[in-house]
Length: 414
Image (tube, rainbow, N blue to C red):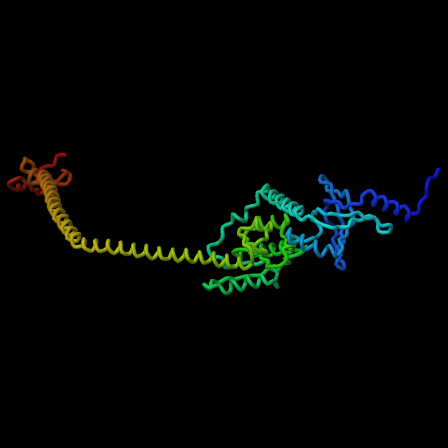
């Protein structure tokens, strides 16, 4: 059997009455902001909650902050947390519950506890830093050596920002007239496009990496709530792994972003970034001047030492020359004596050879042979060696040691 039948309006009124009776108070609720919109001073938004394990949406409610509350709550929240009241942040808000027959369920915000958001913001920063450390890239940019002289500077900044102008003015008017060459890579420095804009600028610099000594990322004064765009994992990872040293000067003295933790050098303002560059080059100039003085001193010492050495050598030259001459004379005398001895020895040796040759020649000479009782017979003026060379009645002569015998051949028996 069908029970009570209600119109939709009647049912919604009963729901509203039930909620008003069962939950009449204000309640503190933890949630994440989504779809934050401002219209006529009022803030319209959604509160959402996701499952921590799979990040699936598990709860959602419409919310509103009336202008009378929002104009007080928003600056209080942003000045305390240093980040904008915008989608994506986690908040702890005090709300009352409304149910309207036409518009349904909604939460009206009466107060907010910014310390909860600060804790969540710090937690997210710590998580990103721990992730970068786990990946081994957290300190890579800090480990890059700075050039001794920094002159070629790639600047990431808004082209129209006063901070960029202050930076340029400080560099161009430095008291020591150090020369700096800057190249601006324009980027959006606040709002939702900060991450993509700076990443694109870094890509553009990387394509010309050899043209620069360092990268400077600067943002001038303004609302500190605009700095949340610098607290992203992708931007922090890109800066940590960039192959040129990065100098960061973002915001005011009290501001801090993830880039401050990963950049090679962290300063507080654009002007401080310029002052750092000037001071770095001044230190380099002082070092080079000191080095120049040391070179001059060492040069004078070396020249003095060499002058003294040459002076000593000059004084030693006469004695060395005399010694050399005397040594040469002795060598010449020794050589002369050795030569005479050698000549005498050679002549004596040759004389002995000649005597031996003379004796041999004498031993084989005709006179020596004849003296031993031999004779030589000639026929027709020629030495006779064969009996067939003469005939009967030929006249022959015989040479003896003490005279010649002439004979007539009577017979030549063979």
